[in-house]
Picture 1 (cartoon, rainbow over the protein chains, first blue to last red):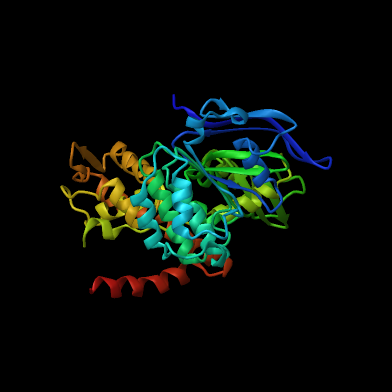
Picture 2 (cartoon, rainbow over the protein chains, first blue to last red):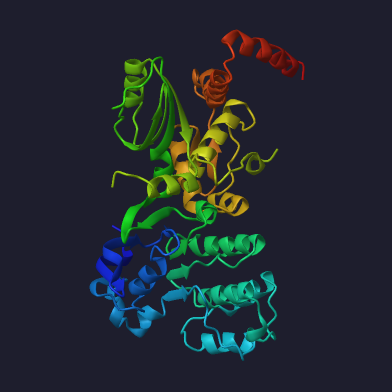
Length: 296
Length: 131
C-alpha cells in the first residue's frame, strides 16, 4: 500500500455564490505524475490552491502527506514545491540573489541542479528579474521549485507561456524528478500533448468535480471510436452498451465507446450485419469526447 | 542497428505508449531485427532517449517478460529470448493486421472491391521481395 501525496474530500468552494468546486474528492498517489486536465475556468487553479491550503474552502478538507493542508508543519512544507500560474517574483532582484534568498528557506538545497538548469535554460545569474519575459520568469519559477528537490511538485499551467523548445526542456526536468518513482508531480494543463509523454495518471476536472481519474494508459485502452456501417438503415433506438456518445445517420453510426468488449462488438456486427472499424483516440480526442458526454 | 534505435513512440497517438513499445519489440523480434540474446536498453536509458515516463517503459518491459519475449537477467537487464516454435510466423502476421484492417476500411470508404485492392497490392509485394 503506497502513501498518498494528496487526499481531498468533500471540497466546496464558490466565488460570489457561483460554485466552482462541488463536494470534490480526489486522491493523488505518491510517486505518480498526474496531469490535471480541464477547460479554461473549470477551476483547476482553485482546486490546486485549496489542495495546498493556500485558499480556504467553504467545506471539505485536504491532506498533504497525511497532514492537514491548513496546518502543515515546516518539515512538511519543505517537502512541497509549488509554481503558481503567475510567479510573483521580486522584480528588483537579480537571478542569483533570488536563488540565494530562496535557498535560505530550505534545509536541503541542490545548488548543482539549480546551476545546471540555469545553464540548460540559458538564464544568466546576473539578469534582473523585472526585465525577464513572462516565459523566462516561468522557467525561473520552475527552477526555484525544483531546487529543494521536493517530494511533491505542484505546477499550475507550467507550460502556458513556454515556447515548444522550453516546454520540451520543462518536460525533461519533470521526467528527471519522476525518474526515481518516489516523488510526486501534479500539474494542471489544457495542453494534452504535454501530458501524454510524462503523465502516468490523468484527472479530468469538470462541473466542479473530478469526472475521471486513472492511469493514462487505461484511459487510452478503454475509450475507442467505433465506425459502424450496417447492411440496412439502423433503427432510431440504436444503442450500444458503453456508448458515451453516439451519432446515427442511416446505415452509418459513429460511437464513442467506453470499455467496449469484443463480445459486444461481435453482437452488434451480427445483429445489424454491420462492419465495425475501431479507432484509437488521442488524449485530446478523449478529453473532448468526455467533456461532451451526455451520460454522466 | 542498436536495439535502442529501433524503438520510437508517438505520444499523441491513440495507442498507449506502453503498447507501442510492446508491439515494436515484438515485431522486431519476429522480424529478426532483435536477435535472441540481445539486450534491450535499460528502462532509464530508453525513457531518457524517448523522453517518456520511466514507468511506461517498465510497464512495457514487464509485459514483454510475462509474454515470454524477453527474460530479466539480474544486473544486466532484459534479454531477448528465442522465439517459440509456432510463434514466429503468427507473430509476424499479427503485427501487420492493424495495417490491413486500415486498408480494408479505406477500401470500403472508397467502394473499391477486394479484387481491386489485391491487384494493386500484388505488384507492391513483388517489388519488395527483389530487395
